[in-house]
Image (cartoon, rainbow, N blue to C red; front, top):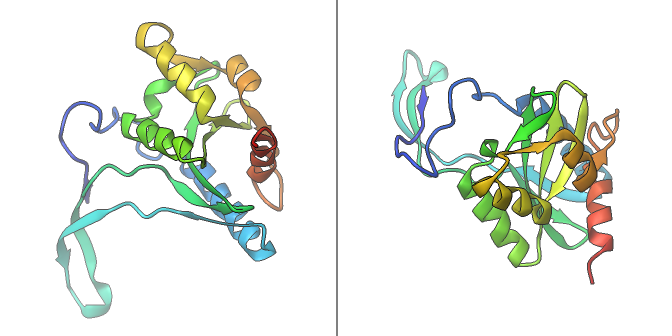
Length: 192
């Protein structure tokens, strides 16, 4: 059993029902990253979540089982690496909502991290999958920060139509499963 920090506020655990949100998309991203690595296109990996192991049961040496652990600190984002000499950092999100992506699905510490990456010249973004539509979009940090600012006083979500306009549609196929580097190429075109 892994327990989340109990501190209220920016780093509090999300509401019930979001435990495995994004896991299906993460598997596709993992497959894509393995493809990119094999082909020599990019080196991008999933970041491990820092965990403090508290108790392990040892019924037999080869059957050791972690039964209690805690997250040490809130994790930043899901993935990072290098593509064409540029640092890339992103998080993967999924929603079953048909019309909008709730901003509160992105934690404050993740937004802060993406902001810091962007400030250092890295490519920071979210990959958002709308399960109902079967689509995946790359939302650059610069667009995300606009929606986050709006959420402070107004709408607390990104409409699907807004995501289609501000994000970059990503092909979902076979090899790679989610070809998000094409969308990253589009982001890099606008850079000096």
